[in-house]
Amino acid sequence: MTTRTPLHATKLPLRTWLLALWFILQSDKGVSSIRLADIIGVSQPTARRMGHVLRLLVARNHRLGGAIEIDEMYFGGAPRSDPDKPRSGRGRKGQPRTTKTPAMVVVQRPAGSEPGTPAGEARACVVADLSLNETERVLEASVTPQAHLMSDEWKAFVAASTGFANHDTVCHARKEYARGTVQANAAEGFNNRVRQTIAGVFHHISPRHADLYFHEIGFRWSQHVVASQKIRKARKGRTILQTLWDRVPPARQLPAVFIMAVGCQIRRTKAGGIDVRSIAAVFG
Image (cartoon, rainbow, N blue to C red):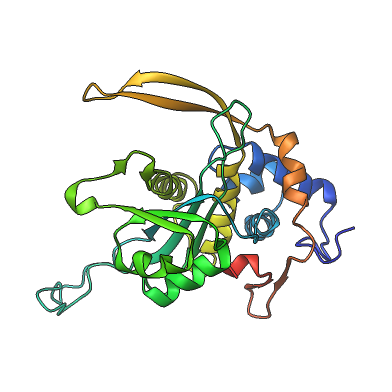
């Protein structure tokens, strides 16, 4: 029953896998490998690999439609200072100020605001840079041509949007963050969720395995439904309509987990790492 799934050829009991999956689904921001090892009674290296397998289990590879928000994100820390190398000056001379890794974020808006409406899906992918080629690669693999894109005015986003039904932008340079329904606040909210999860739970993720962590965070983002809406006043006295969300119980998340399990495989390499055989893990 585990053939051609991430659990293929596992030597651990299925009860151990399901217990680990349950604790990951019921957590708000994920479970570290150290904590997971203590809970299910395995070693930390085993729990770390189990976490990668379960993150691949919740990966999604279908393209998204409707209203789509896109944004960029950086994760990772600044390099240690070296007194023998000067800091960057004009012309980008000297030591680079950061070695953060860029990523592209795609967030689907919910289809409506009625109670019970599921939240949209969220994806993120490590990219080599924020060039037009990388932007087109990610959008082609994750967004349907009929989608309505929304973003800031980054030139790569504007150029790559020509192949889609519509594209609206907000100008952050003029401190414009929303213009009616045109905004990218959901994508920026997902960026903040990723940063909080890394800082509070995992503390550090490598660029090599970052896509797997993004799968988990994106799946958890989508497991909410609209509860209600209420009117509240913002800081400057404006009246806004706020959407309240309910989280889908872990038991009801299981069908969404297992529906995409077949076709994703993960293997241990001779060097001690892991080899992922899934188009979802590399965003197409």
